[in-house]
Length: 292
Image (cartoon, rainbow, N blue to C red; front, side, top):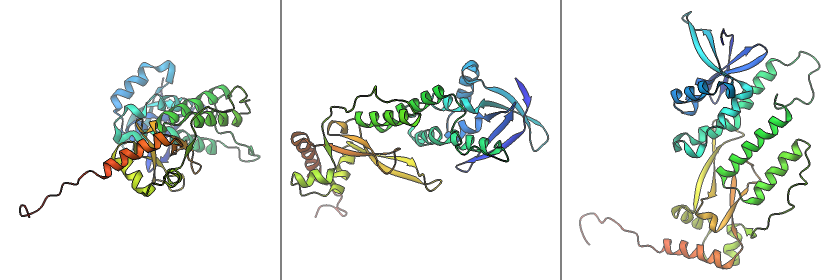
């Protein structure tokens, strides 16, 4: 399908996205999103064109400032998240990983809110606006796709996965009674508590720094929910670190985790032995002017 499109500009983290109103449906110019993330356009264009039945992309034309027609590949807004979540953040270059996650988490909602507000009736608005034009089944399936990827990215423990599943069910009025009431896992405590209980004369800050050096812990990032463009940092246990604890959903923000450690004396002592051995390694110093 080729058609001349009337476009609107929507800003997303200072990037201009192009929205198109065609046959009472919102389409989005996909190239700006691909390049905004940092992905290779030619590869994604091929993927979208070869999967037209899946993504329903169409070619549209707009009149540029020079008066000439410019072709755009556009995707229906309702299909945007399907494409976004076909990208696995774990398989892209680390330099663009945060951008992929940011677009997956926020881009659809920004565009949808713009579309909803533009098309809202002048009077008697719905006091309970929906967050999606999808059918309930599609929306629930999409939320589970998001939840599954979030759980994998953040290395969530089984209890956190169970909690997230329960919350999705309850938010849509679905019964979560099919879920188990608990997951049989080893109990955990905060690092500060365990250091005190096991009488280790080290601060939690020093231990965390050492765990980062040992690659048992890593620093991850997420976009700030309060300040646009600001990045928040948080710590997460790596795959190796999960031997000594688990990543719990942070009570401050469900998009980040906080590491807790197993309340098991043998495991905790083993981890602290690694920490102490690393701290006792001799530091090589370059002495200027030769040997003293």
